[in-house]
Length: 220
Image (cartoon, rainbow, N blue to C red; front, side, top):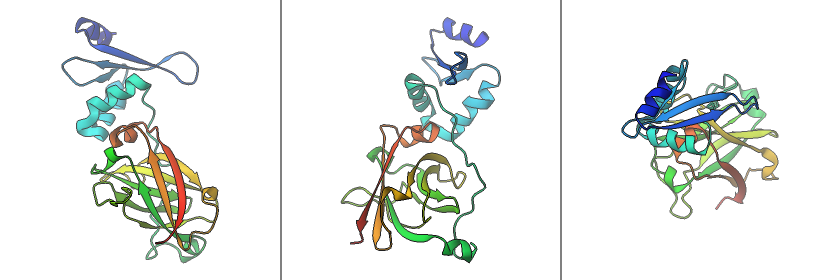
């Protein structure tokens, strides 16, 4: 392969990812030159991997991709499994909203995420809730983002999504939390969702490895 010959000739580092399905086939090959940006090699690798990751990660592309390769294969970015509409009392069917309940939701994120050009939001089967930008104000007490008024289902799960400020409304799925996680009605409480990870926001947007937890506290 020409790309491997080039890498060996220029003493570049080479990372190979093995297919996670267990077939022991090579899923991707990443070349990391000493004096340039890393790039994927193979059939359609530039169009299918290098360009999309470069567009999504921007200036952090080189460091984020190299760090991901050293930890493990870049995973396919999660994309919406349904065409979801933003829940809005001005346009959403009143019957849909009547089946939901309102709650105040706040996010606590890693310090490295604060001030970045990303946003966090939630989604439920009925649609998308509003998102809050990470480059805005934070609580001085615990570093939480401003509260959002959010629609929650009576049961099921609430998905947490990370998105760039100019991306698809849903973005990248970080995980989900069962509604039963907080164990009681949310009418007079604030639901705090905490995101824990050693990844930067850019790394999580490319291949998320995060832990989500939820707690419910009375409104102050």
